Length: 267
Length: 220
Ligand SMILES: Nc1ncnc2c1ncn2[C@@H]1O[C@H](COP(=O)(O)OP(=O)(O)OP(=O)(O)O)[C@@H](O)[C@H]1O
Ligand SMILES: [Mg+2]
Image (cartoon, rainbow over all chains, first blue to last red; front, side, top):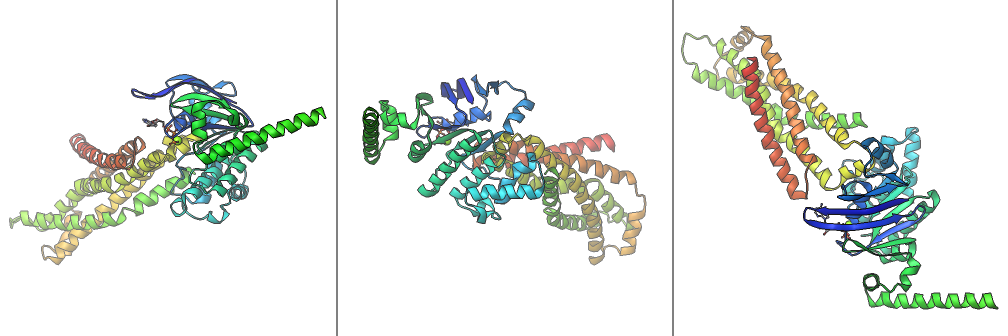
């Protein structure tokens, strides 16, 4: 569980996050959603300590991460896997070496075991064939997937993904969502995802935090979102006519379902 | 992993700048011979003196300082832009997140590789410079190979070599550390990488010249 307690963050005069408190739950896919520029990336970077916060603190399973010594921070960080918005692959290394990197640095076991683990991870993101290519030779979506493979290779306890499926086609995007969800449940990971992909929201949003201009505007699950009355959230999520229709259909469906259930119970 | 990175840097710095060092040291030796011959016109001074002066100028000043000024451009800009690019594309952040001490992991191998390879390059530059001077002297009919060798051997002070080596270690440290600092601390985008690498090269050159002066004043 990761807790953010009254986080404040600004750059010079400009305040990006005035006062954010939130809880990222273990074993769930926690989504941070919000329009472009609403401070999602900044919030995630504050959470992992890449950006120092101005005020407030971040707790990892009750431990105060913000005021930890460098040594203690390192220990927590070795349990963190992170995918950056721009993938951040090491461009002097091949795809395979990129995924191998954390294993080389911190992993135990023989080179053979490590190679096996790397191939396993690449297999999960369907990139086994690209193992020998350099980051400059693969597409943006492939880079994202390599980034995910690199983030999960050490079986992290905390997984952060900054827009894991922007730039991916809908099919691959779903595949990645499914993969992240599977891993989260399988290893009981605390997963935090930044996204504005509505599929992700509906498919894997166990716990959603909606950010509006640096503030937490709404919080709930993907089931709550259908019935939410929050105007800003509705404008954001159901931006197109198509999505509004889909929402109404889903509402109807869920309504009927619960009606059936009630009837079955009574009957 | 540290050793791998160290070897990679050694190859980059050593082999990567060998070509340019080769060319400049040959020309440096040749031109020095020509110019010294031009200035020493008196018939009382033996021809061998030319070789002696060429030797000392090259060992004391040209091989270490001139080569390092060029290396500041070649190696320095490469280090600054490599680290700058890693910073801007969040590769350094990615390593930081893994719990890696990025300063140690990224900068230390560069400094160590530079301090190993650059003195080697400077020794090679010294030999090539002296050799180039001899060839040019012979080809342009200024002095024969025998006269040249005789000049090289007379009044040779081993301390000069020691001085050149001290210089090269200090310059090597500057060439790797100043650009590392600029590259590592880049903020912004591609434009800033360019600016950082320009400033890195300028500052490195100035520091080299300043240290050159200081060492000459202190040790000679
Ligand atoms: N290093 C920085 N220096 C100054 N301002 C910054 C910096 N990083 C982000 N910002 C500002 O913070 C605000 C939030 O940016 P952030 O990257 O968190 O947005 P985001 O929600 O991740 O958007 P997107 O969905 O487009 O990725 C933006 O207005 C941006 O200009
Ligand atoms: Mg972002």
